Length: 404
Image 1: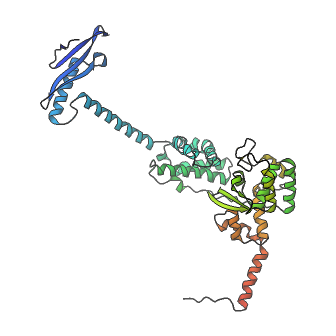
Image 2 (image 1 turned 30 degrees about the horizontal axis):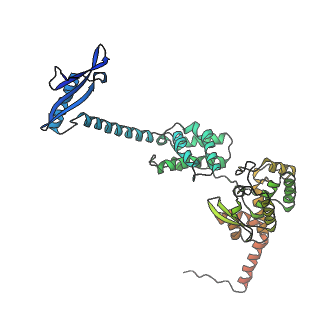
């Protein structure tokens, strides 16, 4: 196809042989101009793409002027590259603004929760509880509000709503802890620059310490009842009673964690993500040996599907009821539950003279203060220690401290 002149100097066109735009054949335009003594011949595009001879002419003048001033593009290619760069910058700015304005709910669902669920993230029980609190209590109040606009007053509304609904202090505390961790994550990712608003919210301090431990007669009755219903549940209860292990620690226990020859149980990733050691009694060793005959899973106590158990069976609580362990008891902290087996282990150890520091290590308590709840169970030991001190004082063996 021949190049034809237009009414505009330096602009030519070709007519497409078959394709029409309107009633005329589609035209393709090119322009010729000089920049810095260099002759440039450049194709611009078709009429169907929005190009006209006039538009090409003025674009050529624009490029020539840009070349003289040294500012702006001098070719169509340069202009396209600059436009793409400008769009990229605008998109980046828009994305940054979107992140700045991200709502609490959006950040929780798109970033916080997926990271918590990812391998190496939080335990399943933890993120499931956080998700439940978010859906029921957090999202309805602050879910749609941008992180940067959430105030302590907003969080107080979450707290107040849970309190009015009759939620326990521990549940409210856990829910507020979820909010705290979401903000901490946003701060770590530089999406939130202010002080964590929950720092100005008073967190409930629940007293959830259970004080109930079972007598030997109550334990015997409970174990017999459990054994009549479930050997698995009997074994799990026996292990907790003889070692002080928590339910979650027992559910995670693997055969590779056991050392029967040394009588040691290696507890991995216990509460607080700390490892510790428990010790087998002869009865526990016999229990493990009996289970070895049916070993078909690395988990010592797998669920019926072969996976990790998620909670204590209802059979346990039915056995507690059938034994009458909670009859006429209204205070939840006084009621027998699975954790009462761990308390019973600790209580019996103290009554038998075990030092609290040793018990602390066995139970995996992070501080001795947590173990001191059992100190009242060893009154004779305490009295004996006082007598030793008193006798030493009377014999003049106690060193008198002099003031400086």
